[in-house]
Image 1: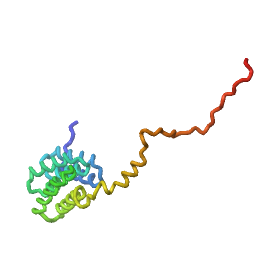
Image 2 (image 1 turned 180 degrees about the horizontal axis):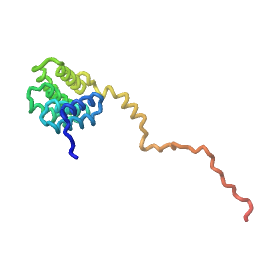
Image 3 (image 1 turned 120 degrees about the horizontal axis):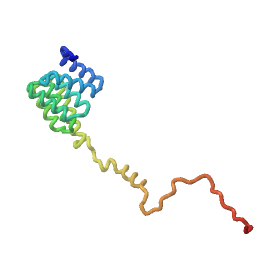
Image 4 (image 1 turned 60 degrees about the vertical axis):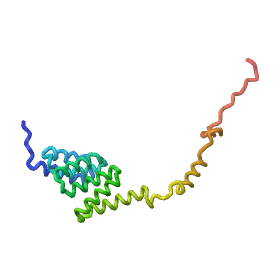
Length: 178
């Protein structure tokens, strides 16, 4: 028996993927987006949705590839630009993510996705190397000293950790020489 073709399969699978992404069921959502991609491989909304699922599921390389493909199909698509910048951020390429968000912000100010991406990237960079980073050695010096004091000396004999509470029975020697 021949399998019937689903009418509107692209929309059905794409919207099911979006629904499952909102429920944070990323594997099922990706499978739905893959089915939608099989029915039409040139749909930009499917590619950006799958890119968003992959970014949320911490698969940034595939998210970046999907966003790149969506941008090739539709160079002016702002959602694809946003997904590409998010994928770069997820890949821990914070500087490039900030640059991509600045480029997107020049083209469109609302909705504030690009501004939020800029703020997130700049804050992360400052946490890593900026004012917020602090002086690591001075901040953790008391903890380092405490751990060093608690570490046993290698030359010192080890204490017995377990002491048996049940006394051993002493053998009594027979006084007679049988």
